[in-house]
Amino acid sequence: MTRGIDLDDLMPSDAEEGTRLTTEAVLAAWNRALEHRHSDPERSIASAHALLKTVCRHVLDRRGVTHSDSLDLPVLMKMTAEQLDLAPTQRSATVSKRLFAGAASVVDGLSSLPNVIGDFREYGWPDKRTARHAQLAVNMAGAVALFLVQAWEARVEDDLLEIIDDSKGG
Image (cartoon, rainbow, N blue to C red):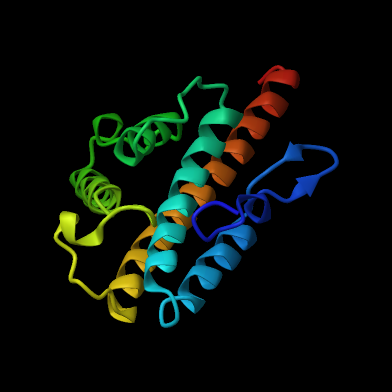
């Protein structure tokens, strides 16, 4: 158990593909984090942070990108977005740039949240975290994590179709 989230639950085993992350696993982790928002808001917030880091690391691992476990969330998010062709510099459309700039802002905000061991007041959080603080953090992280997993699944499908086309000589 890492900061309130069982990371192994995010990575169901699949006999043919090895370990993979699914939208269902992200939704389940997201819901578990939300369940704790009333009873343990700090745990809920830490779970949201761990969820997003886990998704980023998974995508990077599956793409064969070397990364350090000590990388902070904004760096992991940027690397993940680049691997999924989601980085604002890789898109010319203004709407895409705004969307991913907003996601980056969310990630920066989440990365400033302290971990369970940290002192929340040091980071400008109220002395008492409430369910609404936890719900905001968890929903932001969950939405970004889910989007990244769906983008990853689409990327895997696109890569597979490209391999099939290449094998047919097209």
